[in-house]
Amino acid sequence: MSYTSYNYLLLFLGSVLIIYTAMPQKLKWLVLLISSYVFYLISSGRLVVFLVLTTAAVYFAGIFLNKINDSFAIAKKGLEKADKKLLKANIAWQKRAVVAVTLFIIFGFLLVLKYSGFFISSAQTVLKLLHLKPKLPFVKFILPLGISYYTLQAAGYIIDVYRGKYRASENFAKVALFLSFFPQIVEGPIGRFDLLADQLYCGHSFDYDRFTQGIQRIVWGLFKKMVIADRANILVSEVFGNYNKYSGGVILLAGILYTVQIYAEFSGCMDIVIGSAQLFGVEMSENFEQPFFSKSVNEFWRRWHITLGAWLRDYVFYSVSLSKPFMKLSRYTKEHMSEQLGALVPASFALFFTWFGIGFWHGAGVKYIIYGLYYYAIMMVGMYSEPLVAKAFQTLKINRNSLLTESLRIIRTTALVVVGMMLFRAETVKIWAGMMVKIFISFSAATLLKDSLSCGMDKHDFLIVALGVAVIFAVSLLKEKGVKIRESLAKQKLPVRWAVYACLALSVIIFGAYGIGYDAVDFIYGQF
Amino acid sequence: MEQLIKILEEIKPGVDYKTETDLIGNKILDSLKIVQLVGELNDEFDIEITPIDIVPENFKNAETIYAMIKRLEDE
Image (cartoon, rainbow over all chains, first blue to last red; front, side):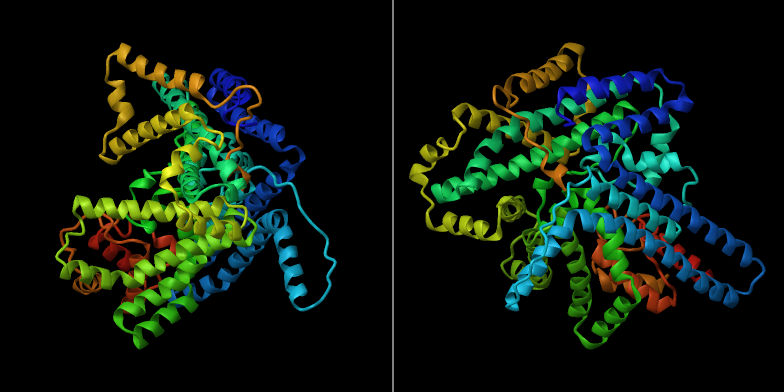
């Protein structure tokens, strides 16, 4: 069930909200849990079994960890500091074993279902290189809805319990609701148990202001998805599917439009998700913070898909960086290298795992790994060249924080992101390379306008996308300047307020990309 | 405290750590700098800072970092 469909927006969301509002407070969580599982069953049918198994795995592991912690708390009473330390070390392996088995189970589902095809085809390639003629089976499973998201969420929960951030929940329903909540199950945001679970479980009464805010946010998301993203998709699909037919200029335009599409679509989906949750009084984490105002690729990834970046930082980067072998490496580089290299070399290793993770999480294929490593390479160049760049700016007496320099840095970052997005969208790395070459060798400004109009989008489509992008840009600029748009709007007089809402809603109805033969395009990030 | 300020100045010079109140919010310490700082603190104070300790509240300013060190020293 797509978040942009009438079935979701009017039938599903509408009825769940009515039932939720009508229910006594104590039972409201039950409405959310049942509706989340109904949503899942409608969308993914029998594959719900993997969600249930993941929930059960982390729930029971959590209970087990609680028991280990409780017995430690009793046993350590009255012990000397040294004995306490010894006891702590003794139970540490038990806790580690519980978490390792749990992560093995839940990531096992993800690896088998999402990546087995990739592993088999990679093995086949290796065997062929060794002049063997393998006959390995072709395997492709249907992915359970949102498995890449709920697996990370479940792993984050059990790792937090293991680290002692909070005590595991004894309430199975609470864990189940945390992992299955229907607005977030398709494409996140990847939630944290300590921030989300109580909000979902406690039950909120109806609040008119919150309701209108939720609806506004949903309509804003629909505007981004249906008016901008789905329209841009027409040209993007055509050019990425048949790039040989087009000149470099059109290919570049398709790359830019794809970047617009994926941003409008993913952030639009997050607006619908966060807006939907708001209707039930649940505040979810933001996943975007005006990413196209970033002055470096590093900053871009702090503002784009924030919850994924934060998950990898907390559970991969810090885990690797603070591990004993890694600390040893840091000490070694500190002693044997210059001060600057001593700090950079270990960081480069730890970041490799993070970026490999980002690439591999996005999809089962070499292309996605290269996609992650593309950003890793840019970041490494940035980190290692930083002293030289700083010196160059100093020598040339250029202010790094002037408006002009910052604008140029934003443009450079956006250009690098467009290239990355093209790699993400292109069918294969070879096609992406072909497209990049064509941009440089067959760029024809003279025929760009004519060529652009031959890819399925007419003048009106371009105008609507351009106006839509201008609106998003204006809103982002205001947010970047610290203006709280919705609060400011809420202070306006009723006719002004409603005129704005009506314009937005009407633009979705009038300019939304639909009509005969049109299907809403699947959310790109919903396919992971 | 003096020892901590010295380490902070080595890792990221040009900041007045005695008066700065939000090292995270003001983007003075990013995740790379934090890892570097943790390595130094572990060695210098003979403590073990684990991922669970890496929360903004602990790294907000020199005082909160110092409080964390003291707590870990007592553990």
